[in-house]
Length: 591
Image (cartoon, rainbow, N blue to C red; front, side, top):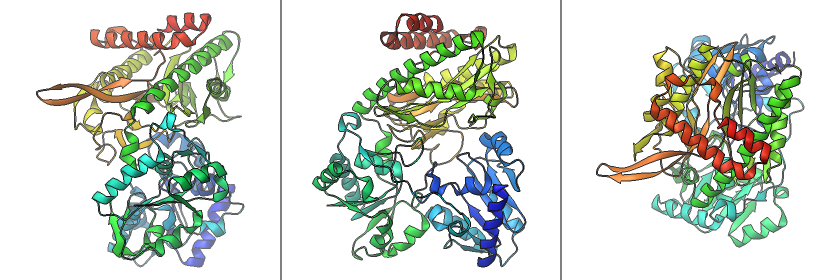
């Protein structure tokens, strides 16, 4: 009922402003994938808790547009409300715009909050609506009036991410950014994305669940850098270090006035894909240089120090997962356990490893049919009870000061069917196809993804998500600029470079029955240089065995069997020094 009441409250504000429709995304003013509670407007208006989708509300319709990863989840969360699910035919597209054009008459007016949309998004919508004689007004935040008891902005204290982990000081990073600014003739560089700000200034916090970032803006000048943040969040020791490094603190909400009053003779580099429209309009337009956020490709290339620590974080994760699955097997010998209990237990085992700062995303513990819900999150009272039968899919990750992890394992808790083994093995063959790939420098993510899907395709099967996403270093588990996907998006078309950490996670999902996904993180590293140029390869850095009970071995080639043997030998050799006698015996059996 609360969703229906929220829709009614929004419609009252729409009537006051004479809007025929109002658009609500899932982002915040920083274009984040995951937002602080204050900006979870899409969840407030629809009840949908996924990370991708847009809502459109008119006088007689309320709809959520989301992709196939969330079809099952959204149907459950929207049940009993006036909010209707619109299934995207193509992921990450704006199909809701076509719906608006069909349902809003010429001369109509559409509203949205320009703080929640990037410059590029607003300009595209404006162009399309104008061509159809529809006005787009992005000046009104109707939620401020409609959303009673709205959560306040988070005020969690920031802390330093030490150079011994980061590998580079903030002053060195600023020096690199300034060199690139000079090459683009920019006097200033505006940075809006929270993970970029955290990386540049070597700071972390907990303002956004599972993402160790702080709500802030930054403007980098050729001499000084300005950090727009609630000063109460900055401890005195860090204030002194910022002052030493030429970093000036300013109020978070002072960003508008600062941009408005920039010296008109100075230029500022702005990324229109990550800067929200309201802030962009505050800048005197003669000064703007359009470009990409300079730090984004820099932080994607993990330095030697970061790589060393990432591998250490993988050991911690492997130990935690070992203890989790040993506990689960023993518990199921005589009883049952819920999906929520498994998630809590795993977080506890990770916390024992030290330098742990929580999950990198809400653990996906999907038993039987719940495993087919790609981004499933178990909840008390509605989650499944796990027994010694069927298939369990566990996708989880941790945030450690020395790295971010993300791993999926699918395990058989009873005797698997021939179909389950065949489909699991097809997924495994795709996983191995990417893992052992050697490729020439300049190769893009969308050029290699077919290797992960080809064996499923041969059986007329597929999966509805990308195969790989970039991963941050004690930062966001989803990080650009690269991905391994089949589309023509900017991420999928990004060149894969040495130092990039990416997930390798093909899968298969049978609605109502089971889900399969095998995920390791892979690090792109240099291979040999030949007469045909420099080649790269992937190093699988995640350390945990793949369930042999689900493998149909006759389906594997000798080369694939060899890869699996070598991988399992590495897992055992690397993890065993950190395991006790019983844990070593268990691990040896799995490997």
